[in-house]
Image 1 (cartoon, rainbow, N blue to C red):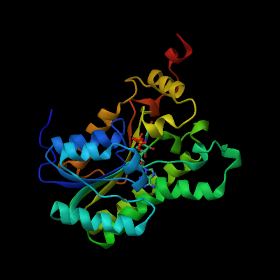
Image 2 (cartoon, rainbow, N blue to C red):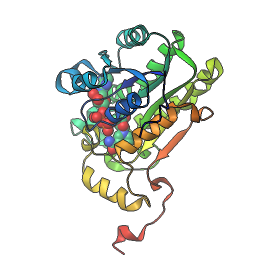
Image 3 (cartoon, rainbow, N blue to C red):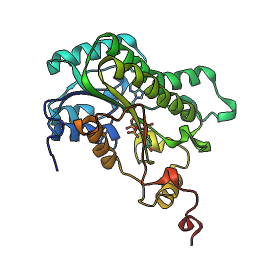
Length: 267
Ligand code: NAI
């Protein structure tokens, strides 16, 4: 149910590929809550995904940007401010891609060119976006910047491979840039660590369904859905969470604090 929590706010949403994407649900809820947004994704995703459908439904402009290109990102921020008519209040980074996982290279035998690319797309892009927004003074006072992450950044999940390092780096950027943005103009920066979710990126991880079922049993509240993640993002973009910054926030039904769950052993 909409409460106009984001009334009058302007935002940029990265990463809506299809209606399973977490960013898709976030975009829908942002507009329901009264925000105006622009949508962005890599040019290739615009050709193969369904983002234009979403844009039409939400009356939002799509601005293509490869998250590893400073030129694309710079243009995205300028054009978003133009279309939305002012500075930005919130940004969602919902981007992940592992070349080594995709090309089935084991963690113990990484291709380093691909590894660099993985880190660039999945983590350094977050710094690029924030650096540009900082330099351009594009964020409004008390704005909110979020990225989505996974607990494999902090604990071992062998099949998550090099994405574990990408997520560790992503979370570190939220802490470090969070400091500088807070000092500059009270902008907060956080990561949300989400349960396994059945999306294109999620299903790219080997044995995803087993992994999903395991987490669902292990979490006392069960896995958090993409829709529930979107609700949490709305709360973090709203003025109700203005003093939360530089945090990695678990949105996982309790999974991260579990030691042992008898149901996992079939008891
Ligand atoms: P998704 O596959 O729908 O979204 C990933 C997005 O990254 C896609 O829209 C894709 O086009 C975009 N992307 C890839 N390369 C790009 C580039 N060079 N430039 C710009 N965009 C690019 O999957 P999902 O699950 O919605 O992923 C969103 C975020 O949530 C990711 O950061 C993912 O790691 C994170 N996450 C996902 C979980 C899951 O189980 N699905 C669990 C925890 C976190």
